[in-house]
Image 1 (cartoon, rainbow, N blue to C red):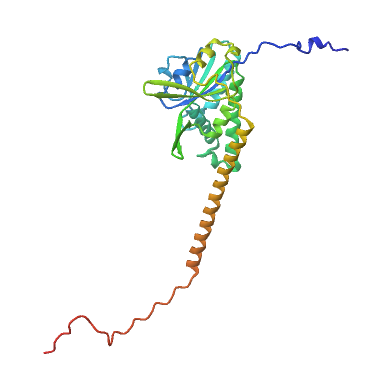
Image 2: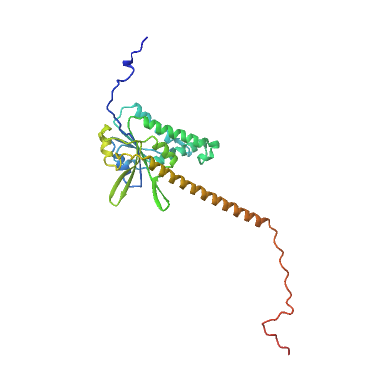
Length: 304
């Protein structure tokens, strides 16, 4: 039977582009406007982990591992998240945004659940890397299922500060390997910061150069208009500039390698000196020299 291509293929003409970001990663210090920004998203449902669900003016659910009298976890955060996602997928509701506040605590509670099931203290205590593999599988599945929801997803994280080459670097406190999973499924990473009395919102990373005219959600557009760098286009780097940057990176890497080699040589030299000192036979102690015939500076006692 012949196939009617008109019913299978799309029309050969340009169509209006709709490109609305739906997944966001917010981070910053406590009381720097993270939750406030999350509350600006339309019809949010907060999943709180800090015990302040009742203090939140928006609808919220408190997440925590619930333990029985024997101390074992009876209702885990994994079960609770599964029930919440299923309800959002299958039931009628008016929520448009799901806020995970904070994702750092959710990670810790997932790890605690796995350890509780296996009767160990840490994931490392589960042999052959099975603990880490179980966590990674559960966490990745969580992020993928959240992204599949027809809603805005907002992850909230605290901040970590470190100093490199006398420069203070601020980054999410969520471990980098977990940030990569979350941020890899997000459209914007935004830092919230308070400077004096001013609250700053700044884009740190974004999936692409979003265009205002292609965002069809007025609420999301209004939020992005308050964020520095939300619609700033990435500057294209010339081949000459790329070559110069790559050369500097390679030179810096070579210096690091050279420094490591020098340090390794010093370690080997010190180790060799220590080994020689331990194996070397001690030299005999020289015999005491006789004192006869030596002049003494002390006056001799007079004989009576």
